[in-house]
Length: 188
Image 1: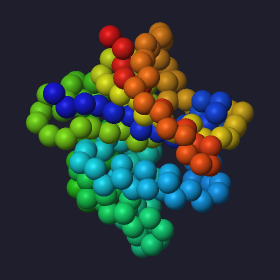
Image 2: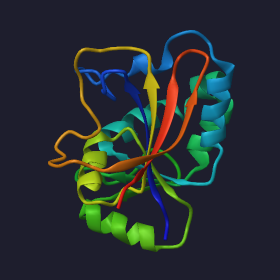
Image 3: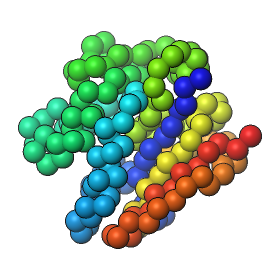
């Protein structure tokens, strides 16, 4: 069975996006070649990306651009080549290559995807998708990069999750700039 993994940047106070939807804070700070190599290695892996509409639109507006190819060529190549699924009730046709639009029941569609052969599925951003799939018990692993910044407000990945989620730490790594990668598996 395919694994469903969440990968998100969060702030020290637990937000994955600011109140206005901004997450520029995740890309600021001092240069960190070690973190850049980590991100490039993740993007070059074998996987299928899963997005909600807002995150998809943002990613589709950047990664296929010449600026992305110039600033982060390895990541851009990986993001553009990986197969993608975007969940949307209103989108009829995707603008980014290698993208399938899904409009059906989120949890049932993801259950079916997990049973199909193929690479692991990775959710980037997409807080409402994360919260719904977490509540349905479909996420196998949570990977977060805690950034040394406090926003004081914003959205968490788990907005709307009614009960506690038991997680087990499976890995961690601290980068020179103070970013900390944490990996948790779903307990149970």
